[in-house]
Length: 192
Image 1 (cartoon, rainbow, N blue to C red):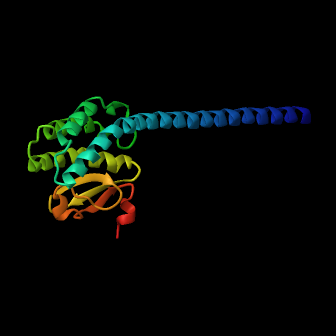
Image 2 (cartoon, rainbow, N blue to C red; image 1 turned 90 degrees about the vertical axis):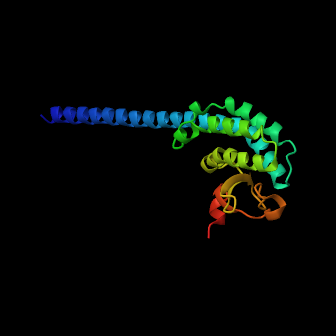
């Protein structure tokens, strides 16, 4: 009798061990699968960020020109942004902000096309407000290094610039330092 009980106990332990191994294997597979999916999400978002780099560079040059009351290169850079925005692939972006990324390419393209046709500084600044909306949204979501989103209450508009001294593109030298950091990587450091 004791022999049979011992065999049953060993079989039970082996069955429980096998069950435990199966559970551990499933949990491990699930975690690996989740990490793989997370990596896929990152790669789509990272690809979008890579595609945004030349757009951001052109955008910053436009902002710098407007901050000095100049239209130098504004129309050309806006035309380049319109072309680059048409090639953006927001469909590969996934994760918490995926739905917000969907409209970024279209909004960038339309606003950049309008800016590329601006003939006066006032027209360029109005068009730049519309271009800044999707740029500010993207910077707020993706927080690229050393980029801030600023807001000018006088212009009732936001813009994106490199972290540092405020350079207001809406009023230029008249009110160059008018603006408050409202988003981006350094936003938390500016909160009071």
